[in-house]
Image 1 (cartoon, rainbow, N blue to C red):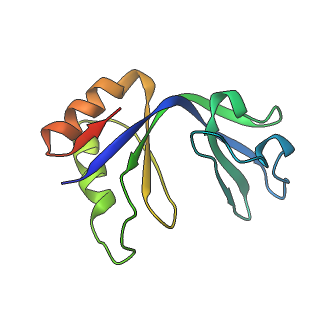
Image 2: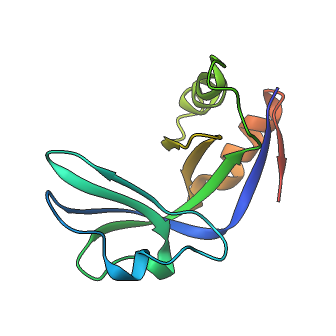
Length: 128
């Protein structure tokens, strides 16, 4: 199964209007944690630590972040499915995103214990 790291910070999922620039405060690389920015025709989505949420953003906070220990081979299949499937059965909502090297899952902070128990029960190992 997979090895996961639980990042220590609390995260937020943020939305800015379509066409927005990346806020200057997010342009410096984080010393720890992760920032993900996605542009679409409809919005700019940002995932970041709660202490870095842009002032103009609509934000949903109190998420915890799990990182699949990587790097993963881009030809790998079923990585997210092996995590998302059991969490869906346990009715734990998630937000998933990926980078070149690995996959990330956000779970609500209030459901963290349940999410960790579910992932461990299905054979995954969580550190942190």
